[in-house]
Length: 193
Ligand SMILES: [Zn+2]
Image (tube, rainbow, N blue to C red; front, side, top):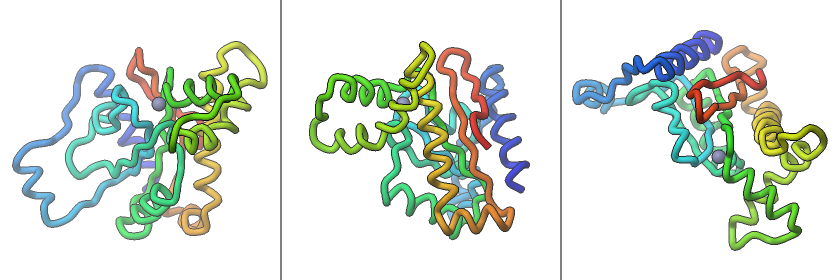
């Protein structure tokens, strides 16, 4: 089941990239869903306006359970929402979706490198992204890209350690993967499984 849903998402992304989108947002679909939802995948993505999960995976009403925070940063509301999707809606797949040129990771990196403090609750985001920025700085040239990928992996690893999700994975009822989205080509790439 989790494997099949992963393929469904990747096929949807292929349709999006090839301009063959078929997502259903029709009146009949809306009415058919009014009594209940059975989304097949959870996407925890970034708030970036260029990365709307429904569009890039070509999924219509009722198909994706979407949570978005800047840089896919976690907090208790996010964790509770993920656990709700898995426990109450029996969704078999969680995708942590990062992307190219992530402004949240870039801003966090600049603030940390300048030893500054961000305003208000933005500082929470910066603190949560600090580990990824540090990993991104370790070697190579493309620090931002490395930091984004590190953040995707960090979040996936953190989710896999949550007792409720860990149990669902052990029972083969859930899969958690990380993906990276290319703003230019529109393609997603599996970063961690
Ligand atoms: Zn972003």
